[in-house]
Length: 209
Length: 209
DNA sequence: AGATTGAGTGAACATCCGTACACTGAAAAG
DNA sequence: CTTTTCAGTGTACGGATGTTCACTCAATCT
Image 1 (cartoon, rainbow over the protein chains, first blue to last red):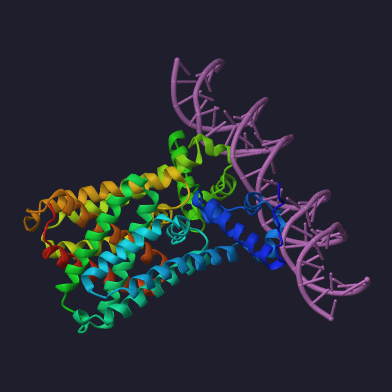
Image 2 (image 1 turned 180 degrees about the vertical axis):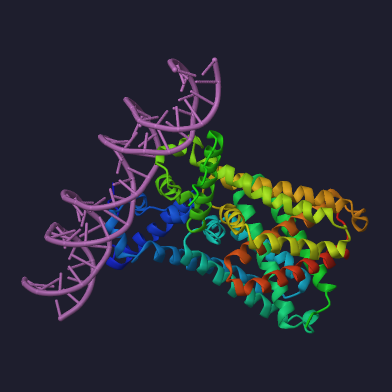
């Protein structure tokens, strides 16, 4: 039997523990709100003593904010993946939905965290989430502004459409996550068609500004 | 000084306490998730001893379900108010938004409860909320089916449009509640225009079925 | 080789938690 | 007028919670 060599640097070990804390928190928040998360049960899950937690985060709120950051890294990666493709307006919808569905399946924990805590209990956390979603809407509005079909639109209309899309995506993601796996295909299908319906609406829209 | 006569029947007193429990719970859930609600702090707020709670509810989950029921009574009243008016498709949107905005301002606690616990921690509560919202979507689909412009639409398309509307309303309501009072008019304004955009989409939609 | 750092330990604290139990006292029933 | 019912009381319990503090001991620095 060969011994597993464990030459782990100090920082590596610390990072591993930090990861373990984040993962354990994601898991525990998966059933029961972040506001109801207890430091001790978290530590128990990670396999450390409660006080060791403070070596990594100053407070539970900081943990929450770290989880928000992490979650939106996934989302931002998605957005960039969609952007890299051709920006044909029709194909863009399908592509977006496909990318969303693909990334939802793995990374469920992060998306569940976002949808659960978006309007959930802890102030700083839900504020951070809503702020990030706001930024998302702004980015999308900027992308939309570049499309020739929408060149006549003002900032106000672009923002309306963008937040409409973002809300639709988030709602669908939340439903997807909470639904039984068998229903998931149906949900992405509905999302696709609803997005198309909105596109039709945008095509026939008379700008306000 | 005339003494206030307090000839309160036994049942009246019990009902009053029950109301106090529901109100206190709504207040406490207003800051911090229902999953984080503690029996003792609830009792403290109401002004009763913890064990007295059990004279009214078998468990905290039952309290949650009672709050869900209550909240949707408000919502259903709204829906009926909208229905009573003329069903002109264009006026219907404005009317719906107006009624929603009017009822949101008072009854904030109920709507906040719904939006916070929709995907929140306690299983039975969020399931009950999602079930009620499902029913809502079905009712709306049934109403939409009666409109002459949509007579050619299949059940599938009607459901797509209905859930699109319901999600938009719920999202807007959640944002409205969490936003500063000064921003609220802007939010209902956006909601109105987004609803109109969807109507335009529906008008140009080619049914799938 | 010796000194320093810092992630993780373990006991102790004051406080909160849910629930069990025997009770009180006034309203309702007989 | 007596009996019953039952919303609310008060105590007591075993256990979980967040935070403190002094500590260990291996990786890193000098």
